[in-house]
Image 1: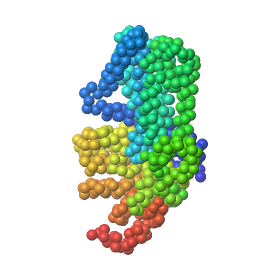
Image 2: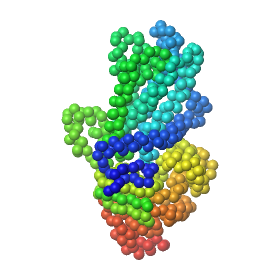
Image 3: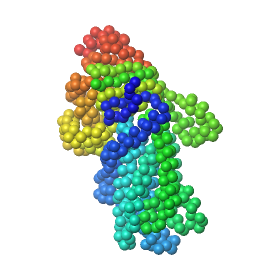
Image 4: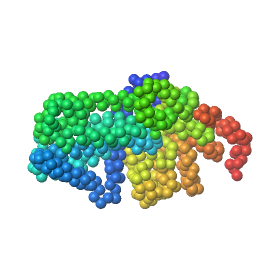
Length: 282
Length: 257
């Protein structure tokens, strides 16, 4: 047979057969590539998800901003007072941290249902699975966009100018790559095992407290290097430090990249092994 | 030239009951070293078994068989949704599928939004999308309903929208389940006309059905699935008499009445 290259829906030829793991990795990468090529579909789906959520409401997606504003104001004032911290520095720190945390925790929790929610779409025609992941990523980025308004307001009130913003570029890239890996990994696990969503939800809850989000790493009484064991910490630092103008050591970037690599290897392995199984589990 | 070739195709569904769907029991199995053993004893539902056939241009195929014979699974496999774990399938040509009345629609979105979404998923250009929108609006006769959420539609309206949408562009390969025959008489007439038109232009048509009428009218080939096996593959004159246990003349006779 001359047709050694299995291709995907858009092309006029679809050639499917049971293949080796090696081939499956190729197919998984092809799926990811198609998902990036067709990012517009993911964007459209994500945008519609958000629009639908607020259709018929008077303030619409502005509610996202209002809820976040309330949350940050409460935590910012309360803890600055309780812990005797400088209001200005704590408030700015907390506003960034909580907005980031909201993104990452809802990304993780939404991930568990990425494929189960797209059931009718997946069973009605052949599409790259990564499109469903991009849908969730875009929906969460849209929410993040609304929450950024709160940070802008906080920065204006306290007259703070963000420091080196160019460092945010690689950080954003890493965050998006990680979101993709998280979506694939937890999406598949959540489709296969019904216990995964509540487990994940419990873990993210716990990580909210053990990650320096509402408290600062500098307030630790022990060697703060241990904190690098928490995979969320370096991810937060690479975004927070450039904005707040704090110095960032290489080890933090190294840890962030290292954790991302581990995440990607896991995601790619599971995706290659089980990609074709997803419709069977529906 | 469109074609579908299926070789030694088997599709089986792993049945995940409590033991494998539950992490606690899986962990227990893993710790006690029984995971591998149970893995091999995993219950599989054989949906299709060792199927072989080739469809070529001009084939209008009726897929018959009892409920649970694997018709929908075969259609989904031919649409590239289920990838075979055993066997090989090769599909040439663009496919359009009408596998369930909702055709992957989002019920919260309006009819028009669903049309646009489907078009962008299929990678149609703006111009094509506009044409499809017009064609669907005309076919479905939904009028202003097109701008209301699909969940407010009656099932007949959903059906008209879904059908109009999937058949708006002449696909090279059209696969459908027989649900489209559930509408009212007016719709069936319209749908029939449209299918006939598509059947003429297109190239490969596969209909899963229980109705001898549809087969006699549109099909020149019948695939008979029985418990996942391909029991017979031939012309309607060959297969229908055995499938229905009646002489072919009698089947045709009944239709004329």
